[in-house]
Image 1 (cartoon, one colour):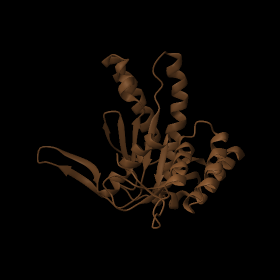
Image 2 (image 1 turned 90 degrees about the vertical axis):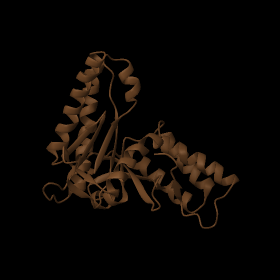
Image 3 (image 1 turned 180 degrees about the horizontal axis):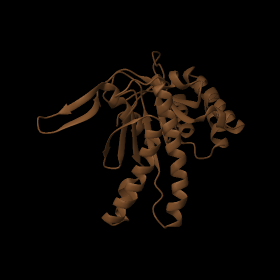
Length: 256
């Protein structure tokens, strides 16, 4: 399951007439949808400025998580190209957030006697939507769950960024930032990811000072790294007020 949303859509829409907004959205949806379809995805619906899609239905698809991640990266690359075009035309440059989760859901025609919709329903759909929303908190662009990570880890470069329990769910999941395909990664990116992962290991071992130093090193390599900033702040808090002995590292999200 795949959800995407435009960053700051409200402020973007305020600057455009309805006609201009419709034209920009049409171009945006066409670009994103084309990449999803090229990577064997099924477009479920457009919800305002959001896109919902899924893989594995109506036809069974092997490596569905890998196709979804490839689609997300293709969409990201396309929006960079279109961003340059929109900037030249003095239009708002659209950026997006994407959340991906893999799990069991029911897919079929649902609705009323007067109107039906082919869609997916189930807890897995909700979790995919939550992943999209978490990007705003962490300052990331593409987040995937542990279930997706396990299926794509040999092909994609990711960064484990937290263990979370999203609002409305008791079970926790590790979440990962999807960076790029393995063949496209640079040595600098790998170094940055390693530094952060070292910090995360110290953090989960309750070694706050060592963790903070590693997170600071990661932030120095990538200045606009909100995730590292979040963990530096957490380490400062835990140094003064350590968590209880049964703390497992899970962060409980209070908002969607």
